[in-house]
Amino acid sequence: MKEMTAKEVETLLNEGKTLNIIDVREVDEVAGGKIPGAVNIPLGLVEFRMHELDKATEYIMVCRSGARSGRATQFLEAYGLNVINMAGGMLSWESKIE
Image (cartoon, rainbow, N blue to C red; front, side, top):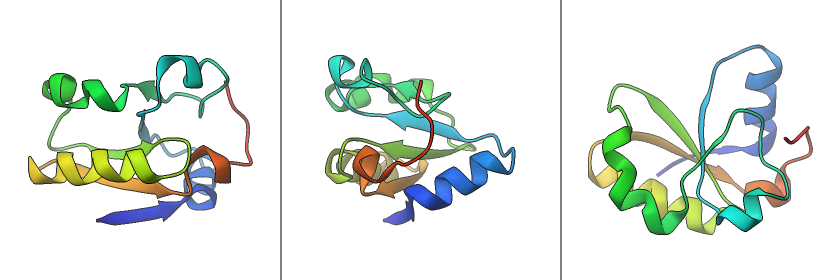
């Protein structure tokens, strides 16, 4: 499983890179703040919404601590998607949120 740190994600965003970030936390968790531009697909819905994802696109998976996003990353990898887990999750995120 590929991983990157929250700092690496922040650096890419600060450089103006367009990232496809999927936040797999529950809706009420995301209401407290998410990485700007992240799309919320709760972990329990990933299987049912993965048809919305493009195999040619790279996605960064995020959750609170990195555990749920790690499970989502492994699941989606098994279906041939290009996914990276953000290690440490939002607990490691030190930049702005929306």
